Length: 198
Image (tube, rainbow, N blue to C red):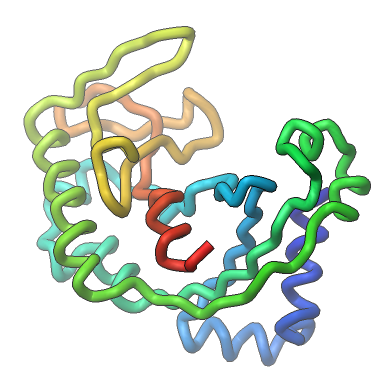
């Protein structure tokens, strides 16, 4: 499994194969995140936050909110790997073991969210999410998938909202009592790419 391989490599880089060191990082509120960068320098995935409860989110005040506290206090230690095949398609065709031979460590970086971005980029998305939840979440089905009008990556600068669930049946109750697949905030790929100088 490629992800297991990357995690083991990350542990070796940080010498964190014993419980005491892992505890030290936890106390310092440092979260490790492995990032894979494609052959044309694109990030392969967005970064998720914990799932939120719709009816709890709408009662929060910004500076006491879960999102604010996470952004303000969480540090990230990014371990960034670069795919060395000529194309992403070529890489995707390899099996897990073969993929490990076409990944190189690009860089490691300790990062925390700039305070200015928390206020000017994250807060408006958080506010818009609450406004939509209180007023009306528009749910539509297309191509056997559910879509909604919560803030997406294409309309935000830093974070967006999208599902974070085991499957379509893993739902939470909206303020109007309808059910919707569990959601969470995610960092936008392009924001992280810019911040990490990838």
